[in-house]
Figure: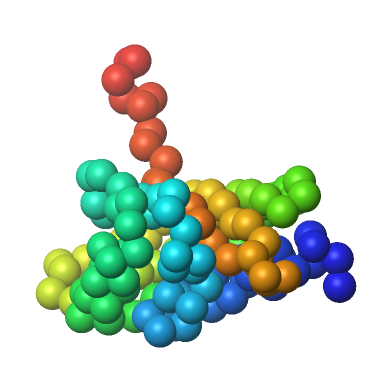
Length: 139
Protein backbone atom coordinates (compact mmCIF):
# COMPACT_ATOMS: atom_id res chain seq x y z
CA UNK A 1 0.00 0.00 0.00
CA UNK A 2 1.24 3.54 -0.73
CA UNK A 3 1.68 6.19 1.96
CA UNK A 4 -1.31 8.06 0.56
CA UNK A 5 -3.46 4.94 0.89
CA UNK A 6 -2.18 4.40 4.44
CA UNK A 7 -3.13 7.98 5.35
CA UNK A 8 -6.57 7.44 3.81
CA UNK A 9 -6.96 4.38 6.04
CA UNK A 10 -5.94 6.50 9.06
CA UNK A 11 -8.49 9.23 8.36
CA UNK A 12 -11.23 6.67 7.76
CA UNK A 13 -10.38 5.09 11.12
CA UNK A 14 -10.60 8.58 12.66
CA UNK A 15 -14.03 9.07 11.06
CA UNK A 16 -15.24 5.68 12.27
CA UNK A 17 -13.97 6.19 15.82
CA UNK A 18 -15.54 9.66 15.95
CA UNK A 19 -18.92 8.57 14.60
CA UNK A 20 -19.11 5.57 16.91
CA UNK A 21 -17.90 7.68 19.87
CA UNK A 22 -15.20 5.08 20.49
CA UNK A 23 -12.74 6.84 22.78
CA UNK A 24 -10.18 4.00 23.10
CA UNK A 25 -10.01 3.55 19.34
CA UNK A 26 -9.76 7.32 18.77
CA UNK A 27 -6.92 7.64 21.26
CA UNK A 28 -5.02 4.79 19.59
CA UNK A 29 -4.78 6.86 16.38
CA UNK A 30 -2.58 9.54 17.97
CA UNK A 31 1.17 9.69 18.44
CA UNK A 32 0.68 10.13 22.16
CA UNK A 33 4.37 10.82 22.81
CA UNK A 34 4.69 13.58 20.18
CA UNK A 35 5.75 16.85 21.82
CA UNK A 36 3.87 19.10 19.37
CA UNK A 37 0.31 17.74 19.57
CA UNK A 38 -2.51 20.14 18.68
CA UNK A 39 -6.18 19.29 19.04
CA UNK A 40 -8.81 21.98 18.38
CA UNK A 41 -12.32 20.59 18.81
CA UNK A 42 -15.11 22.75 17.42
CA UNK A 43 -16.80 23.21 20.79
CA UNK A 44 -13.76 24.38 22.81
CA UNK A 45 -12.39 27.90 22.45
CA UNK A 46 -8.70 27.01 22.73
CA UNK A 47 -6.70 24.04 21.50
CA UNK A 48 -5.22 21.29 23.62
CA UNK A 49 -1.46 20.89 23.35
CA UNK A 50 -0.54 17.73 25.26
CA UNK A 51 -1.59 14.14 25.45
CA UNK A 52 -2.84 14.22 29.06
CA UNK A 53 -5.47 16.84 28.20
CA UNK A 54 -6.49 15.13 24.93
CA UNK A 55 -6.74 11.80 26.75
CA UNK A 56 -9.10 13.29 29.38
CA UNK A 57 -11.13 15.03 26.66
CA UNK A 58 -11.80 11.74 24.86
CA UNK A 59 -12.55 9.97 28.15
CA UNK A 60 -15.35 12.52 28.67
CA UNK A 61 -16.81 12.48 25.13
CA UNK A 62 -19.05 9.40 25.64
CA UNK A 63 -20.78 11.23 28.51
CA UNK A 64 -21.47 14.24 26.23
CA UNK A 65 -22.27 12.72 22.84
CA UNK A 66 -25.31 10.45 22.77
CA UNK A 67 -24.98 9.41 19.14
CA UNK A 68 -23.98 10.55 15.66
CA UNK A 69 -26.71 9.28 13.35
CA UNK A 70 -25.35 11.09 10.30
CA UNK A 71 -21.70 11.32 9.29
CA UNK A 72 -21.28 11.68 5.55
CA UNK A 73 -18.13 12.69 3.72
CA UNK A 74 -18.75 15.57 1.30
CA UNK A 75 -15.16 16.08 0.21
CA UNK A 76 -11.65 15.04 1.15
CA UNK A 77 -8.11 15.85 0.12
CA UNK A 78 -5.03 13.89 1.20
CA UNK A 79 -1.52 15.26 0.78
CA UNK A 80 1.63 13.34 1.68
CA UNK A 81 5.14 14.78 1.73
CA UNK A 82 7.72 12.32 2.98
CA UNK A 83 6.84 11.38 6.55
CA UNK A 84 4.23 14.14 6.95
CA UNK A 85 0.64 14.23 5.75
CA UNK A 86 -2.40 16.47 5.88
CA UNK A 87 -6.02 15.59 5.31
CA UNK A 88 -8.87 18.00 4.72
CA UNK A 89 -12.41 16.72 5.19
CA UNK A 90 -15.82 18.30 4.92
CA UNK A 91 -18.52 16.19 6.52
CA UNK A 92 -22.28 16.45 6.86
CA UNK A 93 -23.01 15.62 10.47
CA UNK A 94 -25.91 15.16 12.85
CA UNK A 95 -24.70 14.94 16.44
CA UNK A 96 -27.06 14.18 19.33
CA UNK A 97 -25.72 15.67 22.56
CA UNK A 98 -26.84 14.43 25.95
CA UNK A 99 -29.17 16.99 27.55
CA UNK A 100 -29.21 19.34 24.53
CA UNK A 101 -32.49 20.89 23.37
CA UNK A 102 -31.67 20.14 19.73
CA UNK A 103 -29.05 18.25 17.76
CA UNK A 104 -25.97 19.79 16.19
CA UNK A 105 -26.57 19.46 12.46
CA UNK A 106 -24.44 20.83 9.66
CA UNK A 107 -21.16 20.74 7.85
CA UNK A 108 -18.05 20.00 9.87
CA UNK A 109 -14.67 20.96 8.41
CA UNK A 110 -11.67 19.00 9.66
CA UNK A 111 -7.94 19.23 9.06
CA UNK A 112 -5.85 16.30 10.24
CA UNK A 113 -2.08 16.31 10.48
CA UNK A 114 -0.16 13.06 10.68
CA UNK A 115 3.36 11.78 10.59
CA UNK A 116 4.96 8.42 10.07
CA UNK A 117 6.49 6.90 13.19
CA UNK A 118 7.96 3.39 13.31
CA UNK A 119 6.47 2.75 9.86
CA UNK A 120 2.95 3.69 11.05
CA UNK A 121 0.93 6.86 10.40
CA UNK A 122 -0.26 8.62 13.56
CA UNK A 123 -2.24 11.79 14.16
CA UNK A 124 -0.45 14.82 15.60
CA UNK A 125 -2.97 17.56 14.75
CA UNK A 126 -6.75 17.79 14.57
CA UNK A 127 -8.69 20.98 13.87
CA UNK A 128 -12.48 20.95 13.65
CA UNK A 129 -14.63 23.93 12.67
CA UNK A 130 -18.04 24.83 11.34
CA UNK A 131 -18.65 27.39 8.63
CA UNK A 132 -19.84 30.74 9.95
CA UNK A 133 -22.22 32.52 7.57
CA UNK A 134 -21.23 36.20 7.52
CA UNK A 135 -23.68 37.28 4.82
CA UNK A 136 -26.08 38.92 7.30
CA UNK A 137 -23.25 41.20 8.46
CA UNK A 138 -23.16 42.90 5.05
CA UNK A 139 -26.86 43.42 4.26
